[in-house]
Length: 209
Image (cartoon, rainbow, N blue to C red; front, side):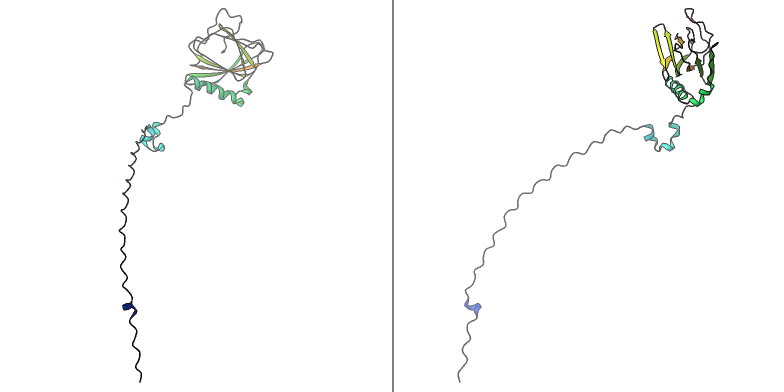
């Protein structure tokens, strides 16, 4: 009986040994890049504190707020009063009368330290040269046109124009047109005198102007 052939040698034994491959050492890591320097801290802007910022809520600091004045005090406020009356025609237009024989005027309003007069002017009527004593004044033309004569010359004032004058200011106001005119005069303090100047060419009674 034939015997089985001898088994072949194991492949692992027959194979030549595989030399170990050397693993290259890792390259040197690059030097760390330094972090950028921190930006300098911002310098806070100077804070200007107002009374309201210091006190807080504006609704809680009514003592810091000036109450609205009921009556004018400054020249600008008196000029504003005259403009507001001029714009409110319903408050004065129905009162105006024209009188060819005498000057017509009506005290429209009074307040602490001032008064407001409404005047009409028929053609040719004038005030005569005068001043207003210790009172300052604001003349506002409401309708028509008036001419003002002063030592410095002649000025024409049409509807809407205003003229502010100080105590002792002398002028003569005349209606040189062929139509009636209306003007508003604010005096502060209230008019107590209106000295007439003897060189006045016109002869009129001492009405506000």
